[in-house]
Length: 194
Length: 163
Image (tube, rainbow over all chains, first blue to last red; front, side, top):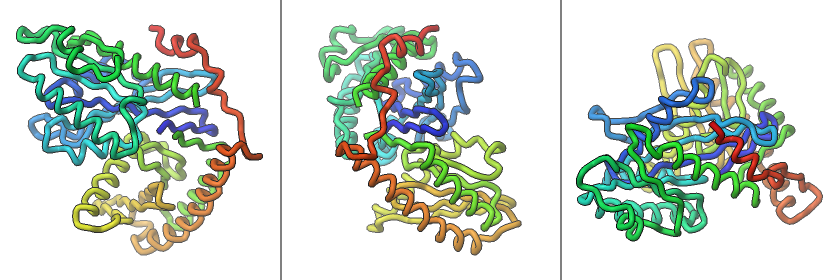
C-alpha cells in the first residue's frame, strides 16, 4: 500500500525481498546500504539471531529523489527465509507494493526456491494480494558459485509471469541495483495508473 | 489501494497529537500506520530516528497481533515497554493506526492511559471522516481531488534512477 503524504510531499512504498534461507536477501540490502550516499538512506535495522540469521526482518529506508515535487521513499524489507519462520514472513508481506524474489542458483537449492515461491503466493493471498498483479522481479543470485544451474533452467522453473530477471552476485553488488530499480520502476508505473 | 493523506487531514491529526503530548506530559507522540509508515508526530521528534521507530513499532504490533490470534484473542490493544528512564506506550487507535507515546518520570502510566483513551476517540472521528471522503472520491463525488501522479512520464521515472 503506497502512502502518499500531501503535507510532507512524500510518496512511501514498501518493497519486500523474499526467498529461501541463506539465499542472499540480507546481503542485497547490505550492499545497497554500503553503496548509497548517507543523505539518501536511513539506518539499516537487522533483527537477527546470534548466528546472523534473519529472525524477523531487515529494514532499510531509501530516498530516491523527487518526482513531480514529491520525495520518493522506498522502505526495503527482507523476510526470514528459514521454513519455520512462516508466521513472521507473512507479517512482513503486509502492505507490500512490490516483491523481489532472491533465488539461490545452486543446484541443491532448487527445491527450496520452488517451495519459497509457492509460499510467497500463498502468503500474499492471505493479505488479499495477487502475485500476478504485483510489481515483481526475480533475481538469480550466487552466479559465482561452481555448482549452479543455467539461467535458462532457472527461468524455466521459477519464472512466474515473465517478470524481469537478473543474474546476481550480491556480495560483489552484481545485479543488486538493477533488480531494485526494476521493481521500483514497476511500482511507480502502477502509481501512475491509479 | 493507496493511503492518501492531505494537508488538512495531517493538520487535524497533528492537533490531536499536540494536545495529547501536552496533556500527558509526554516527551513525544507518534501516529503510525500498521504497515510501518509514520503518519504524524508531535513533541521531541527530532531527537528520535522516527523511520526506524515506525518500522519497529509496526513489526512489534504485527508480532503481538499474531500472538493474540494464536491464543484465540482478537488483538492486544495496548503494549507497554518499561525502561529505567523512558517508557513506551503503544496502542491501536481507530482499528487502523498505531499510537506511540514516549514518556519519562514527568508523566505516569495512569495519566498516559487516560489521555490516550480520549485522544483515541478524536482520532476515530478524523479517520471516519477521511474514509467517507475517500469513498466519495472513488464514487466520483464532490470530494474528488486531482492526483499529480497520472502525469508521471517514463522520463520522470528514469530520471530517478540515473546514476
